[in-house]
Length: 371
Image (cartoon, rainbow, N blue to C red; front, top):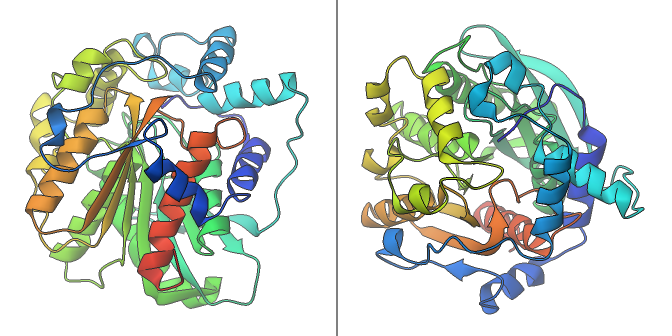
């Protein structure tokens, strides 16, 4: 969830490149091998939530992050927090230590531009897969607690969708708090979907094949935006990919308790995020934040990916249960031995590669292009 104002897109390119080396079979391995992941079924909020220990590929990333000397986010101003080292910086340091290259991968190109947000232009990065198109379109929302994070820090996850799902990806820098309080990020998320649908043809996209995706705060935004699209009676996306979403305002759930002091995300940081984005503590119960209490009926097939060592694990498990109860098609997977932010770390972690392929396969299935 940490952020940086430094441009680290070259690293993220590599993360996506390594993810692109996989195939649908790598996701099958994650499904079939209990050590790799756990699939939730029913009543899962209280299940499978031991704190665990970082596995042999996760621990070196955490060690590198600690070595970068960042300060606790919850002790900083938002401006200071945005300058702290990120897990992506830690992956870059680890790759350098391992003598591995950070060259951009083949398979997709990207361009930065501005698009229409809810209250004026917002920055966006548009990823286009190689080929003639038209391609499906994925609108992607980065993490960072609606306060930190940006399209550079989360380039790897977004780029992996473009390469592995063969989709145009529109990744946006929505407005963040405390400068722009709730519901600014949510309003920009919906505006970006409207823009992408209206302008799909001009970016080699197919407006009939739309999807939403995001990580952490962005994972919650993806679900909240699907609800807003339904309520506005707009064309529904064909799929939602929600990676360790913020799906509730309750910081006393089992995973918040078990992983209260986890890295790189802990309970104190989540409290800080809520305080900086929301206008009042009562807004934690707004259905756009507290998704587990929202009306979830009629949403598209949804894929939820979680990490075991993460205060948001309960959010993802409970959201999956609530979606199923609302009649929504859901697949949810918890990856053991990994932490929040592991998605996008395919250059250094096999489970990240599996998770990225799981997400891409779900998109390809929804788009009718395999998977």
